[in-house]
Length: 269
Image 1: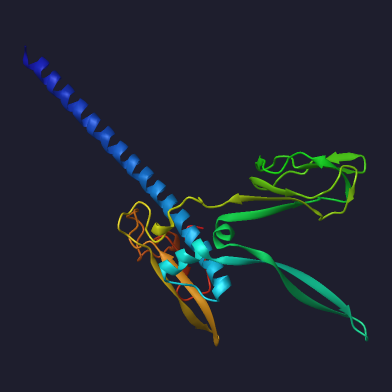
Image 2: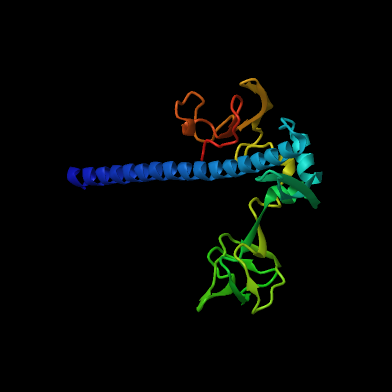
């Protein structure tokens, strides 16, 4: 074997090694970025759940809580009233109207249902003649799926669902009945959070074993008025580019709320 062949073999081997090394490096970067994206998605989902739980907790107790046990206990065992607000309009003797808002408690539902589920309703889109439903109670529906048939003049309209969910109830309206615009025809709901989430680990940052969210709840003075504030953040971001010192809010560690302002906005939004 002459020198030329030897050098050819050596350079080919080096080229193959460098090519593999470069490919492996690129793949490693891609996989790392992919893992960071998945981790951040899970962290954001957990922050959204904590935020919703804190908002409902504040509605019932008049404050936020920085105690994880209290928050978890509220989610598991709390009750939330179902309220209906009514306008009472009274004519005044000298003219004009007086409007009073009265609130009735129709019952209670579990805090978990209030936090985890979103309830929707679909009303008659116009004045017309109801011709029948295209769904039944228990059906799973998707966005833009046709809901019912409404005859308006000579036209038969089929209004769609605006969200996905499960049909909970249908108004007792028979085909051929005249309905007015705004009449509630369908009630449906959908889980916005995984109902099987392990609430005992609510305070743990997904993808970061042993790391817990930092939580602050308190009251601050705003123009002489005491207001409730809440902030929850990931103290050890999986993304090394997320640093507290970053000037851009969107590049800081994932969080929602503020220690100084009345806000529950997340910096991912």
